[in-house]
Image 1: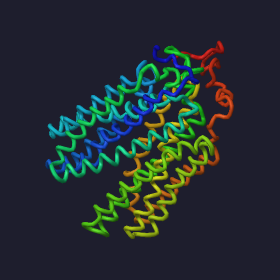
Image 2: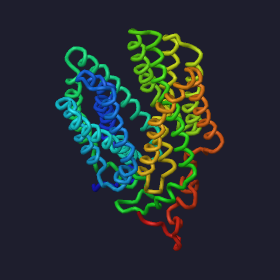
Image 3: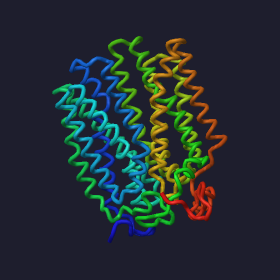
Image 4: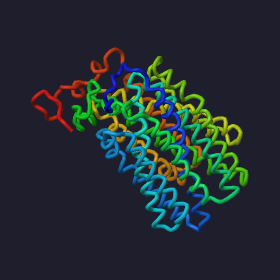
Length: 435
């Protein structure tokens, strides 16, 4: 059976779906090698804080710049599995470079490779998921993806932490690179013929390899997509700086024991994500997307207010558990809502790239803006400014964001310019402009 020939009503590809579980698990474990271990390893090699910060910035910029082009590439690629496989190979190369060549040019090259491939791997897995199960079953599938990814990240963090303690931080990257083997094994267990091409890019009527697509201009003018993207930008602008602010305050108040508390602040919310993610996926099909979106966004202003009221480490850890609720809801809903808004456009992955890029910009700006505020005011004012930004995101959803869960036919709910056969921006013949 050729790829793309599955109908939406065909039997579920169970073997491929089980392989997708493990793909998410091992991918999260592989990418954990690029977490805080990089900072620790480079510091042990005698790098200055400025040089470490520059490398991390290079990686972040590479990811931001390539998000939208990567989305375009994933939409048009005939084999999403091949893209994920190539990305896995590139990430493995970057990990080996980090472990074997700690000089600045090599590490900078590894950072660029990691940032660029990160724009392909996550969206590529989302496209494979949509191609396997279709839009109607996507919510629960995304919840399952998030659950396995959280479990993989937690397992890898524990193992890599032990390796760094017992052996060396260099060995962390070599072990992480070895995880590419089971990851690629899981990828090969996903049958390419079961990843429907039309479904994987949100093509109209699940068309085959050359579907009609709405113009990029029409997609980027969809007010619902712009509203959703704005909310995620504001969420990241508020959320990304919260944990660094709390961690910095703990260093001043708790001294040497602060590292243990910070570890708990990072790990425990991920356990909550693993426990809640599949519930979020199921609930999104019954409650709808909007109530869960409001819930996930509202966590940031609640956390920031509570953080401003206490400095007790135990209470801080309890409050930070709420971040697990936020991570579970938005981890599932971001891809799901983009799929809702782009169903029938043929631009699912391009829209993912746009949302990812602007969310990344919000996260990048967050720490610098809050740092600027913290220098001129105090800790409480900084947290209250975060609260204001978080509340703005919630207000925008309440006032302007409609429910995106399909009712009968999603095509009926799409704006005219996003329907198959509708005139695009600048089109005069009533047909869809081709990509």
